[in-house]
Image: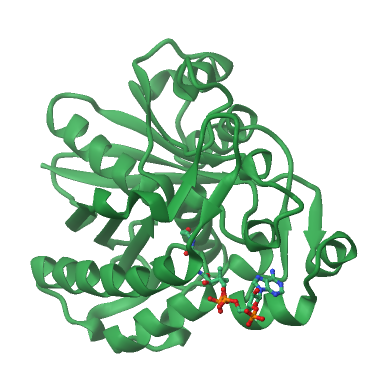
Length: 307
Ligand code: UT7
């Protein structure tokens, strides 16, 4: 059996916050943020549930389905609206569904972990699963802390995964976690995100390269076979360093962080959607999805583009 990506959808808040706007209240500049991160602006607003509902509805519509066709919802979020309950049942309810629904938290690797979870659920009897990555990071940012405030943004992306007798779009998957690095990026109860950016940077390049190489090996493809890299969007310098080591040119890499910043669990589906909208990959070609995040967690997968 196989798993097919059948539809995609996104949601972005209308409010755009530019680097110049942040420079009005923080000791920073458009020049510093652009040079060190590649980020020019980010979206701010909404909630994990409200953005997730829009992205989910759009993905179901894009798949040519109706909500009743979905039999499970897996939501990846680092910033649920409430500690309890999970966001997934609320997203399901707003969509008009009462199917099983649960959250997955693997920080910025969350969407990939959720896809992997959905793949397992499809192998055990489910037929169509809505996977949502949704984040309201702005709520957990101390807007007077320039270390974090310049990096993060809000948004959501979703995909409908479908059981398919004949075709399989997921050629390989490599997941990992190293809890010894847990203190490098945290948000305590009632607190804000805090990060050792330099150390995360160093480790991120390593885990992206190692897991991506393993994923390509498992899928029996070479870097030349990868038409597009869809990386987690944290810092353009991380993306460049990793793709250079993987020997895949930047022309074959999707970048959305200039417009959206780092949207954690949402960044890979937002980038996937952007690539599709811009016709950057054709049906049947291979893409490498790769991410890393707090935990530390990481995930790489080789997927075949289906529509
Ligand atoms: O989603 C996964 C989690 N996060 C990440 O992947 C983030 C990974 N890390 C990074 O992206 C980078 O480490 C940062 C963008 C966070 C920082 O870039 P950097 O090149 O590592 O800068 P730095 O921390 O070495 O700071 C360089 C200088 C320092 O000043 P001094 O000591 O040289 O005088 C900082 O105080 O830049 C200063 N600085 C800033 N200046 C203006 C730090 N943040 C800012 C800022 N605006 N926002």
